[in-house]
Length: 153
Image 1 (tube, rainbow, N blue to C red):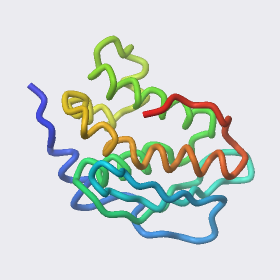
Image 2 (cartoon, one colour; image 1 turned 135 degrees about the horizontal axis):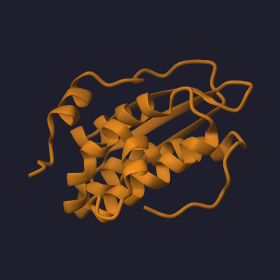
Image 3 (tube, rainbow, N blue to C red; image 1 turned 120 degrees about the vertical axis):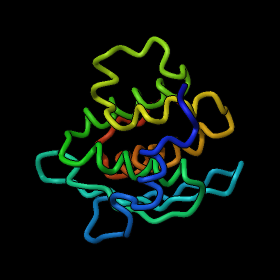
C-alpha cells in the first residue's frame, strides 16, 4: 500500500533539485496555494532549440509541494516544451485518477513523479503537488512557448 510520504518524496523535500533562483531566465511565475499557503517562485530556462534547459525555483510549504517541484525540475530538464506540457497533463491525470487507468507509457514518462500517486487519495493535497507544475506551465506560457489552454487543477 502506498503511503502519502514515500521515501522518494521525503528525500526530495530534504534535498530539492533545482532549488535556488538562477539567472538568466526566459520567464518567471509566482504561485500560491490559497488553501494552505504553500508558495513557489519558478524560473524556466530555455535553450534556443525550444527545450527546457532547466528550472530554478524558491518556495516554502509542505513536503508534498517542495518534493513535487523538485521531481518536476529533474524530470523536465533537457526536454522539448511540447513533451514537458505532456508530462504536466500526465501528472495531473495521475493525481486525479490516483494512477488508475494511466497507461504504462505515461508511467514510464513520469518516472519518479509516480511516487505522488498516493497524494490523489487526499484531495486537499492535490493542489500542493500541482503547485510547481502550475508555475512551470504559467512560465512557459509567459515565455511564449506553450499553448495557453490547459486543464485546471
